[in-house]
Length: 581
Image (cartoon, rainbow, N blue to C red; front, side):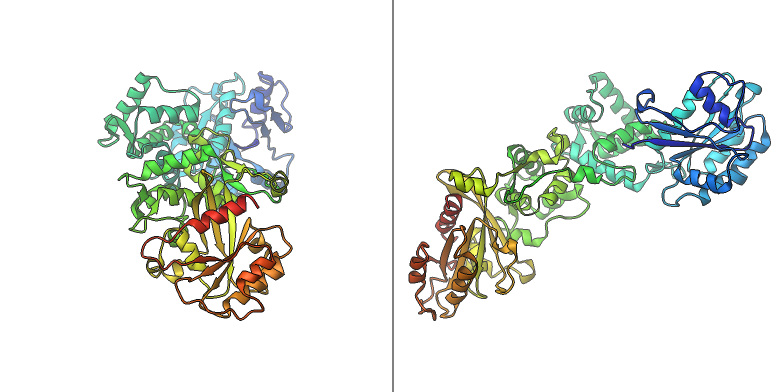
């Protein structure tokens, strides 16, 4: 919500602008009226919307045009005051004031206007007949109020409408010419409907409607009230209610009705609760809640976040095959402004025989995003409505920040669930094969991967002493002169060489000596392509001797050229070494 509201009153001299302000403040008509009232601030606790409100007067006699233009540009809402008994002051609304305001405000964010007919105590008739055509001509006019500063009629209402025009503007929601909601509003409400449709059947049933009502307005709907709402929709739409649940069409119809009946605050309450700002974009504060991550700590999803993500998966796995087809995946990400997962994800996590991401693969990808880029994870959880559906303060409540790795090393134990293994090796040594084998793919299957869909990451679960852990493999590009801190930061290092290439091992030895010989990070040597004939490595000593000298385990034979899924033992060993360095 906005921090405060600034209301400016303009209009011809002697229409009663200053009297209106003074009558509001003192609750009586002033005997002596100055040229201009001082700016007044009404504290938040006495305004209906609980927002501090500044009311600013204008006097042609006391202020220059320049001062007026400045005030117009600062105002959140402008009341154009006319006297109902003065035709000239009414004409000036369209001939002078609206054009002047238009010239001095930003085209993209039109300031809402309120027409105020003062001195209604002096006439028997209403000015509405003259005013309605003006209201229809200018969409920025929110409403028109007739009032009397003298007998205090509609004074507090006038300032309430002015506040409402700022806090619950019609402009972003509704197009009066088309008598329909604007596309951005439809888009936002459609996302809200989809997030609230917990079983993804295309209708909001009574439980879902009640949860929605409680979430937005802190009160459930009585059964009779629920029926009444549905009956209003049934009366007006053929397909607004289906299987006794509210369809998307019905949901959008209800909001259009609220807006047409001047109850925009209902729609705004819903939009703001689901994270939208005044421009109907998701708020940065909503998408990126504060989360402190000290150095040497990592980020993981906690139990609640996994439960939520499981429910999102179940909701979209329509055929219950424990995998997401391309259509199901598109449906899942329909509440995002863009498709977050590209084709590389299918080569980063486990898929089924059709190449669709499995339940395990889906959770792995979320784990990877949380570990590598927690801000992106917060954003994604925001699109899915995590804080609302899981009833948490923000997405940050779904993240565990692990303790400093130095403490883990001192205590010789860790609470972490995700371990990072950086994989080094010369070009052609078999690094990519090593990553893909972790996802259960043999050489035959790996050959079907397109180069542009390649991934430099692979993540999957392993079991260490009966505990499920995630191992994250990262293939480091073999540019020896340039290895960044993130290339080096990990829990375990994997050095891969090709047993059939005599020059392959030398690269591993160099990387180890330059970067890892004196570090506390455990290292493992992988003798890849072990199905091929082994040749002597052109290096000062054999790989086995090198490992013995540097107190590393002996080289581990590995091949992904198997008839079925490659052996997984090596990955369990790596995770165990990472857990107990």
